[in-house]
Length: 458
Image (cartoon, rainbow, N blue to C red; front, side, top):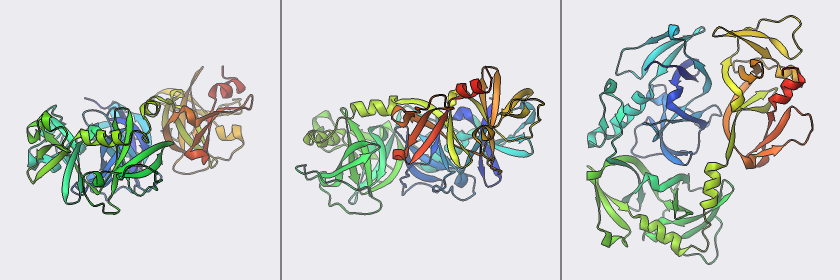
């Protein structure tokens, strides 16, 4: 299928493209939990949008070292089906562009993750195939165990078999246990400070704050009869049961694996009271499948102190009221609602227009269409900051598309209603203030209608 639009990601001056049809969300790199038995190209697991995903390092796959996950420019891309169980870590997201079929050359090599070369202005963009990248990793990880099957498409992409399930493997003591990945909501490091709860059961380690919600944390090791061993490898598994959320401390995360149904032996229903509900016949060992009943029992025994997650879950998933492009002007951060943005492009030479309004810099040609370019810097009395990160954000207006120079694009963010404050100033160019990180990061949201009205663009 021809590629129509790509997201450009860069490592230093080397640029790659990924079809936007393969990408779900673009987010900052969250906390990663390493997997002890994973290949070098897998950095660990992370939670994206409430789902636990395998985090694959783009740089490592391409033999260019590892992405610096501490860099402010690093991003994680959640992927669409059939690769939604994985996420791609990239060093920097630059811009998305529409493909001109005349400038793309497809590469006929089924073993190469680079499927095309795109000529964009003076740069050559190497376009990657997500299926080949993720498929090759799963092939390396699971082929010897005959767990996954590959389809015939280009000899490498994965076909997700409905008869397989993904499991998180973890250790308590010397034993390896497994939980179905759908059972879990998130994985956290166990370094968080916990508030001890008086009167709680011995297995309750305490309570912590997680995104403005209180989370009760139980030590699963104690509950299952193991002596807790404190280590930097300790992790908290966040699980939901019957409208309640609880954290479970384990010694160490081992791996995420897919097993065929025939490899999982589940015990009869008469054994549901047991903590182990079955075994997984891994080629290397037998793995105990932790019964869901264990989590339910811990919640039931501590029902009085565990807060219901029905309302918080609904708010977490449904309280996203908008998305916004966050960018910088003169060292400060501003935002424009995503529905008002047409595209983001690299800066280019602007042709001045005689007797144009003060806000207008000139016009440019975007794929044969003339687009007016305005100056938010001039409107706000700021000085434009020269640099390689400059972009043009092209927006919809009542009279067509209009672009604005910005110093850099910081983020594309999902905004919850609790993060939006109304701007009380009448006639302001900013309708609202976005409040992040408990008020430490404030972003002014442009009211483009007010801007267009003030500049006579009606």
